[in-house]
Structure formats: structure tokens, C-alpha cells
Image (tube, rainbow, N blue to C red):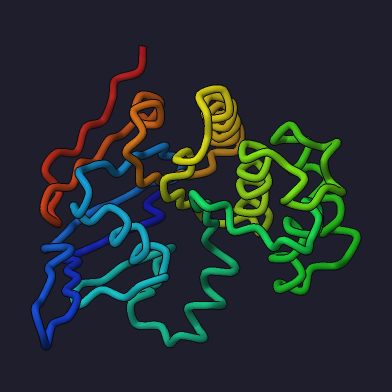
Length: 230
């Protein structure tokens, strides 16, 4: 099942001054259950593409279909609601709310969805256990290591049961052990729950784990490699 379909995506910044062509006609399909890395040199358009797929930015031209809906045509308010219900995000800077505990950070998106309190509490508890930090549920971000904060961020991304998860350089601030642990968790969730993950990354450790590697160069897809699993 296709969960993301990008057709003819272009993005031009500063079109009225000195135009910067970040994306130049990208066509891309992602199917359910993929574990895909989008790679390329700095300035190749990786983060721009991820932001457009996630509805955080709009294409200059082209369409992005998510679950059969063209999100490039949605209003700002419609996009906010669509992201809340369909797309999970993991950022390199974690983006946790400092005054909330790990449990509360995970429950927050479900509060926005108006889920019942008991359901929110149980799902957050289950997700913290799934990412291996059930004993940290009452800790605030400042009391957690970088690797633990990123685990909370992954759990939060999964809380709303999204169609897919977008991860923008999620291992950039982590040491080798934290990176390996985090990738193991994501792969397990991918395999056990068929959760779709799409990464933007420079990290060879992520690229090595990915089953599909899409390389962007100068805003275009240069290669699209599907790895053969042994």
C-alpha cells in the first residue's frame, strides 16, 4: 500500500530575489512498512523534501499524496489537523516540552486528539516500555540523557498511531551506543508493527540499517537503491 506519493515536487526559495532551487521535480513513492533513508550532501534538498512530505513546508509545484489526500492543497489549519492525526516527527533536537515529564510529553499529542485520559495514560506507558525507559516516565527532559530524550521523542511520534514517521537527522546528537539502541528500537517497531520510517540523514549507521536508500543531488533523485536482504 502506498502511504506517500510525491509527484513533480519543486521548491524554490526567494523566487522574487535570488532564487534558490532546493528541489527540481522529485517523484517518489513510499509504501507501508518501509525503512528508508534519504541521503545526500548538504544542500541537496533532504530536509526540504522531508518537510514537504510532512506538511511543514509547501512545494512550489507538484503534489504530495498521503493516504490518498493531496496535502499540498490543504489550508494551514487543515494541515495542522492532518499532521496531528497522520504524521509522526522525530527531530535531531528532540523538541520535547521542558516543563512536562516523559509521560506527559507522549500524552500531549493524544490530548490534542481528545483521546480519553485512561487511553492516553495506558498508551504512553506502553510506549515508554517499548522504547526501554518505562522507569523514566516521571522525569523531565533536563533529567534525561540525549539518548533517553530521543527515545521519548520516538514514543511521542508513535503515540497518535500515525500513518508514517519522519525522522530528520535523529541520531545527529547521539553517541554510538545511543544511536545503535535507538535504531534497534525503530527497526523492531518497523518489523513488529509495520510502522513506516523515512529518515533524512548523513549518518552512515542509519544508512547501513536502512532497507532503501534514496540519494538526492542538487534537488533531484540521483539513485534509489533497494537493498536485498539475506
